[in-house]
Length: 222
Image (tube, rainbow, N blue to C red; front, side, top):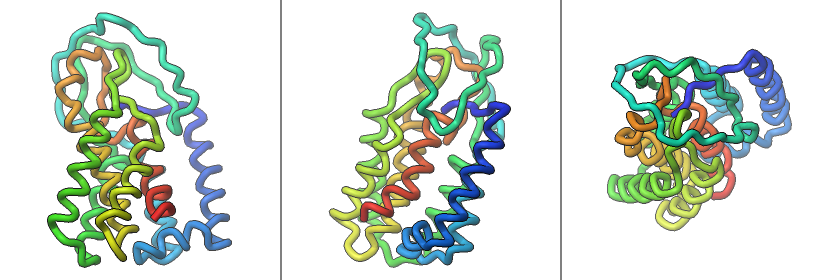
């Protein structure tokens, strides 16, 4: 849950989008998303919606927050999104990130509708992934909630292969994305008021990495 933005971020998105377009032309990304019933054009639309949607945070509410007791210097150079935080004023804005939360939720709902996935299988997979993401994420004073980017896709792939059968690919995407949103964001809401962060974005930079990579890596591993 972090609010991303830097002057170079938009340029980075354009470069990354160009690379993704090139990959689709040689059918690498399209091969991955073909497992989820998407055409190359639909796959590109999903990726671009996730990337550019990550720039948009929709404020939901504001809560009172404490100054962190201990400030931790965090190396954020390995995050896909660079962090720029406004000054902390004693309150935290709770927001929803479009690319890191709304887009994955809508696409996951679409996959559940289009594929004959058992309700219990989906529930067990999401619950397991959420617990793993909760346990492997951590509150970062002054920043928000962070987690290792590859945690969600690797465990999502393992869970999906174990119980998903021939529909492991769509289940991997659903499991990973919802696992991050629920486990690393929603289940961590109780920690937010103690972190002293001005903005806590559900699906934002700290967990966006995990959500975005899940859409590619988890499916690739199935």
